[in-house]
Image (cartoon, rainbow, N blue to C red; front, side, top):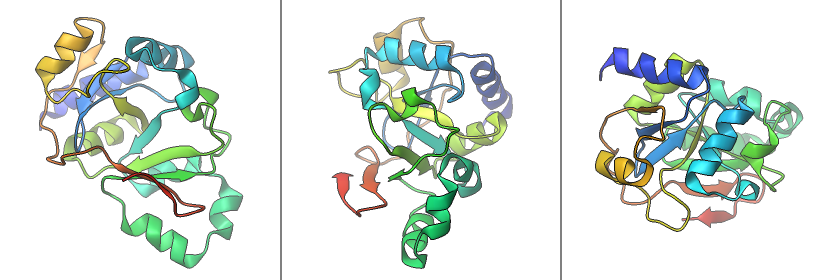
Length: 189
């Protein structure tokens, strides 16, 4: 893992750039979740409907906690907290009530926000260098298959990305599971 490239990717995010990076299963696009212009650029690159929302991906539970509604977390049963913490880090995305730190473009039309604590070493290092969670969405134009290689990234986006963080996928055959923490419903197995 090249720490200099990770820092360069984190700096690009801090400057409002959109980057591509490998995740557990597919390549992702990311940006600073607090930068509206970067969010708009990312959605434009994908031709993604803003109503769909995106995922916040982080290096640790502590990084995502400020993005969860504090009263919800305080009232969460011990069983639900264990369910959350025992599936992270890993390829499990949870839908939870957001705090006011979560901008509308992240949630889309949904009342909940999607969050994941990644087990991918490169993405964890990126989030640590950035200092918090970043936006994560599959690296592909709407309607196309997710990018599985750096070559796919260049085919889909040519030179329209601000940075591509080279690395290996995490070896999973499919994107993360998405579940609703309130209801337990699985939205994507």
